Image (cartoon, rainbow, N blue to C red; front, side, top):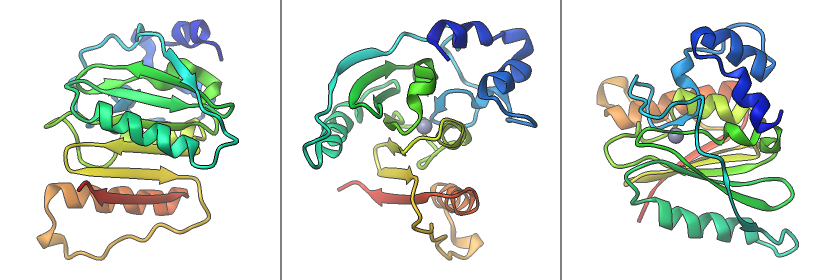
Length: 205
Ligand SMILES: [Zn+2]
């Protein structure tokens, strides 16, 4: 799907239907507010999702160099971590790198359409906006677009879901002892365990 087709498919008055036809899915895709990569699942969007900024081409990774994508991701994660809005860095399968600029709570890499298959996306959650690991919207984007890896970074953690045969381990923590950020971590781990892929979260140093 091209960007204009995607844009045309997004009818604000008929959100769920257009989302489903866009994603080629039947059944319930969830609340429209879970569209885009969002820092949280709340209704606090400020950008018009039918008209997000176009992705900015920022270079091309030389995929013949081992570790090239990791270096590009690490470089950009360090640059986006302190922003007050969300940005996503997308490396598509052929190595092209794009930057998508969002607002305080959301960014829309979907404008890249089918190019997202097998892509690596890194994005930030601005201070105070995130759920620490991924939101529902983040998880849906990973699975709906068949990404290779989705990464998130915030002031405390860096987290990743990647396509892998490695099984996600759900940490065993007594429910009454979990903080908000840990309970979300546990529910993301158990969702990824069910849907497939390897999820991990690390404290930033
Ligand atoms: Zn996110």
